[in-house]
Image (spheres, rainbow, N blue to C red):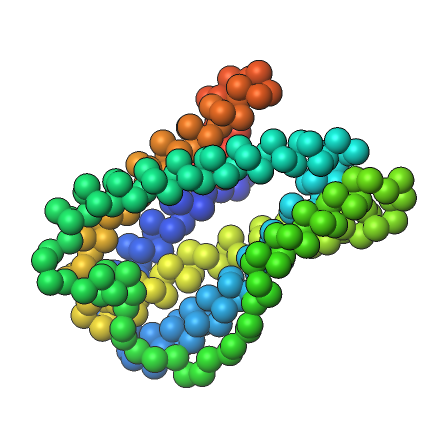
Length: 241
């Protein structure tokens, strides 16, 4: 019998629906368990981001080879331009659309986060600095690309494999549970119904921007590799759905 695989986005939607549906019937001690998990998982996510940058960027630059310096400069310029375009697009879209979606006088923090049950305990995991991880990844990647030795490159490749397995085996499977805990807490605290419609509208706008920027960025990438952008995009979409 063939095993049915559910994509990340459907699992997140299911987690949201379950969190809203059973939030009112879950007892407070049980909700508090999920809130405790969310606090720990959030700290772990913040800790993991610099490691993900270091693990994936380092070997990506190293694999380019001795032309990594020029290639990195071109890539950085393209990435910086795309970041500016995305930032200005998001800013002007938010200025034009969000005021009509959010009621006057409603504090934004009520839309962005729930103030409900406190966790049983919290664990602080101070993350490395993101910019430090990025500069270190660039430095190591360029150095590995210039060296003829494969010893350190194999270490970097093993570290990349660790990071990839951490993402696939820990972060992605637990992300729907984290989303479930957020909506469970909001529903149990009586906040979800007051902000759900605003949340849906804002997420809808963000989702449309997300799809537009993906198509835009993959189109730019296709220009440089001379491939169909929709074929490149099609290879990525199954991970979401």
